[in-house]
Amino acid sequence: MRIATLIVCLLVLATGALAEKAPYDYPNVEVTMDRQGGENIATAAPIAVMPTTLFGTTAGYLHDYDEICDYDIPGATDVVYSFEPCMDGILEADLCGAGTVYDTKLSVYENDEFNLVACNDDFCPGYISELSYASGQPIPVTVGNVYYFVVDGWSPGDEGAYELNIWGMDCTTPVESSSFSSAKSLYR
Image (tube, rainbow, N blue to C red):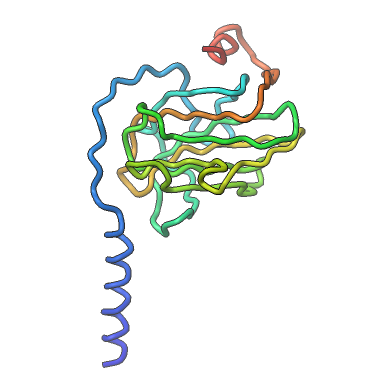
C-alpha cells in the first residue's frame, strides 16, 4: 500500500512539473536566415563580430545537448555557435526577439570540455531564454577560451526559427577559413 501511494505521489509531482507552463500563442513571423548555427560543438558556426544578431532554425537538426536549466525535461533539437572573445568581460545573450517562435532553452559552455557557464529556460514572455544581468545570469568570458552558445528547445518537439542576440563587448575575432565562400558567409 505504501509503495502504491508513493508511486501515485510521484506521478502527481511529475505531472505538475510538466503542467507548469501554460500554452503560449507564438506570432507568425517570416524569418530570413543570414547564417545558420552548426550541428554540434565540432561544427559550431563561428561568430566573428560582436555584438551580433543571428537568425536560424533548429528544425531538421539533431538533439545533441540536454542541459537542465530550470526544468528537468529532455530538450529538443539544437544548434551551436562559437565565439572567441577579444578581451575579458561579460556578455549577455537572448532569444527574445520577434524571430523566435518556440519555447527555448539557451546554454553557454566554455571550451570543448562542456564547462557550463550559464543556462536559462524561461525569462522573456513566451518561455523564451535570456542570459543577462536582468535574468541574473550574465556570461563571464576570458580571452583565450572558446564559448559555445547552444540554442535549444525546452522539450521534445520545441523547435523552429530563432533570433539570437549577443552583446556586451565590441570584438572582431579572426576566423580561419578554407575557402572564400565560407569566409564570406561569416559576415552579414
